[in-house]
Length: 596
Image 1: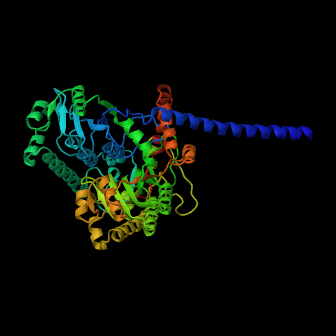
Image 2: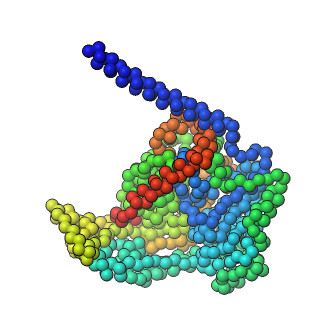
Image 3: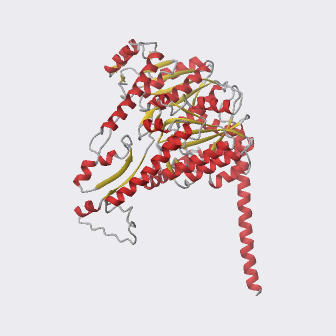
């Protein structure tokens, strides 16, 4: 008996010792990070003028997955939006030096970036852009450059902005050759997401909607470009029609201000800043400001950033950054938390999504409607795309703000499958299934639907479509027949959507914030503090939340940032993150469920 008690006591003592050691480790870790944070301050020289260097030569997303151990220098559109706003108020920041030319930025992304660069300049800062060549035939990269005070190009480089274009790969011919059977139900003729599987060319409706989208982009972009350079728009478009052009021709036309290499332009920016100014990489500046944003005084506004595909359930948590998705359980929970928080005066919903699951979209919309009923004003800021389910979740808003080029609308529904049983037979593979119940094999990828099953799927899609159009009519306070005219699955640009009553105002993120402040009776000149949703998950979230939104916890976060930026740690985390990204891409493969 004594031996058993002794054995039990040894286990209990070992467990308690383990818990005590872990607790001590947490305390010491926090203390060490706090000291590192104190020693480095904000990591920026407090006495020198700064020129922020921002590289826009890589494709950008509205949101990138980040975590405490994120070691990449990736910046998102919203990182630039928030970072430049912080830079406006930082007296050390004299201006920005931006690298442009090969990012292939979309028109709505370019419009958002232009908005914040112009706002930055209006605060008394300068912007100098440098390009080693505008290689993309699209207009987005040069459209961003036009917001700068000066545009430099490298000698002997090319200028190739020509217009707006897109392309689609149609797979129906391939499916015919391998005896695969694509079956999709779409509502209605403009809902063309599945056309790549069911058609060999653009349908009349698909071609009409796509051409109008491209024309709207072209018109708004060239109008902005002409205004930037005080040119006649017809003269500008005539020049673009003759691209590519060499750099001397571009300068003679007045579309750039200087010819020189990147170091020449950078030194010019430093000279313009004056004194002993130094260049600070924008990702570092933005990361520091993002960490300090939690302790900004002022009225609170919930910023709910809905980016990516809309899916059911919860997103996986990771300290290294997770896949960017709109997981309905997480977002509904975030909206409910913001609703219950009495200090939150309004909700700004940032949407950058092509849609996804119909039931997940409905769950999120329901939470937003309840938030509105609970007294929270809601304003939607649309990113580059807020279509289908992305438009659906916007319908509880008091106001919807979109860029002129935002892809929106797509009020419709579709679902389907591709039956590959006959394709497998060509390879000598016999796939056999057994089901108990008349429609047990309804979702089978082997056998196609029969006429009765196809009719059943049509009924389901009709139900979703009718519900969608009814909610648009209610949310936008429009007669249902008018909604049905602009619905049918058709996409619109923000400019065209505004003419049809689908959005309220054209502008960027800060236009939406100003609208939210007005609805919440917050003075226009008052700076707000953003409460970001969804919040960080997992152990690290609980660790930092335990210390609250205090300057001490922010210092600890800065210490953690300094720690993970060490070269060996960056290499280790980077290798692990690449593995996780590969797994996420593997999981993402597959066809959608019924969706908007």
